[in-house]
Amino acid sequence: MQSFLVGGAVRDKLLEREVHDRDWVVVGETVDSMLAAGFTQVGSDFPVFLHPKSKEEYALARTERKSGKGYTGFVVNSNPNVTLEEDLERRDLTINAMALDQNQQLFDPFNGQKDLDNRVLRHVSPAFAEDPLRVLRVARFAARYHQYGFQIAPETALLMKQMVAQGELDHLVPERVWKETSRALLENDPDIFFETLRACGALKVWFPELDILWGIPNPVQWHPEIDSGIHTMMVIQQAAKLTDNLAIRYAALVHDLGKGLTDPAQWPSHREHEELGVAPIRALSERLKVPNDCKELAIMTSEYHTHVHRALELRPATILKVLNQCDAWRKPERFKDLLTTCTADAKGRAGLEDRDYPQANFMWEAFEAANAVAVKSIIEAGAVGKNIKLRLNEKRIHAIRDFKQRYTGK
Ligand code: ATP
Ligand code: MG
Image (cartoon, rainbow, N blue to C red; front, side, top):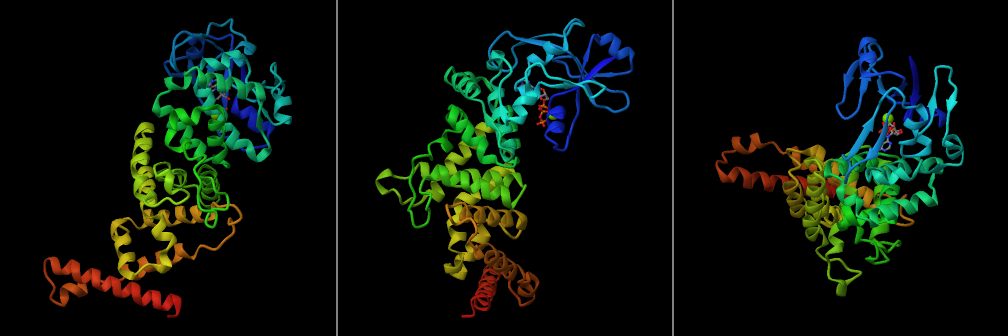
């Protein structure tokens, strides 16, 4: 059987990156001959099989021709005459269109190796324009390989722009957009994904609430970078340095959407952007079907990030209010994630990337002090009904006050 290692595995091997999954293409076979050889068929859109031992994916070489709008309208041809080159030609980028045979011989009809060496993301053929998902894929690869110096080829960038201008991105389904976005958020340089989408106009299509942040100013004393869009990109850079947690990275991305709804007459001030952010975060999250944990942390960050930044100036009763409203008691991990997101927000400012952010620890220790108050002792002291809650709040405020005195030495 003629089988070739293809796609990401070849690319990442040549880049000396860890290879996660290995995809194979088989030439000259049919569904029947594959089944006879002990492979099991998976996937219904085109013939893909699992190897009887390795369980790796083997696909019959195929061509694809666009037959309608959007992502699904393709006519697939996988007859045994389809060549390896034809199969590689239907792929998105030249660096993804190389194959290795059993003797480790590289088959590279579209000069993927050269583009890999020159750090270029370039489309294989004009058929690239037939699948709008490829715009998101290129943006995601740009985010992943930015660390090696990859750039998008000018002709590919132009094609992406044209696809967006022709409304092709409208045909994507939310699930695919979120899948690419969530993967991109977890890449090394997630900001590059959003910058790439912005450059081709796709950000406006699927993330309009985010797109409008560019051009909205902030007070220079808090934000040397001034621009809200640039600030947002800096915040996800910082979040990416701090954590691999998807919810935190998403919350970092959308924490300032409220600044798109403040009164321009009041700029660069953004009073109440914390509350104003809730609606656009909901709208974006619901449009993309973002998981609840991401959405909830994002909304909480919008509402409370200014409180956390001012943690050391807050009255103990206000600190308790924040803890209550965030339900830190039942969801301490989520509260910790809020504090990490706030840390990214504080550091995501030009020239302030290395600043200290004691507010996060301060809030966490205030929480621990308040959480150490035992409800049992309140009940044992004779409180009943509503009074239990009242006494608990009082005692927690005392605990926070004591902690604060110890912390500040005052
Ligand atoms: P990753 O490391 O993210 O898995 P990958 O390149 O392996 O990257 P896959 O989604 O696993 O990406 O797809 C395997 C290969 O199939 C790609 O390398 C590419 O050649 C091709 N491919 C996948 N999706 C598309 C698409 N939408 N359009 C064109 N080619 C695609
Ligand atoms: Mg892959």
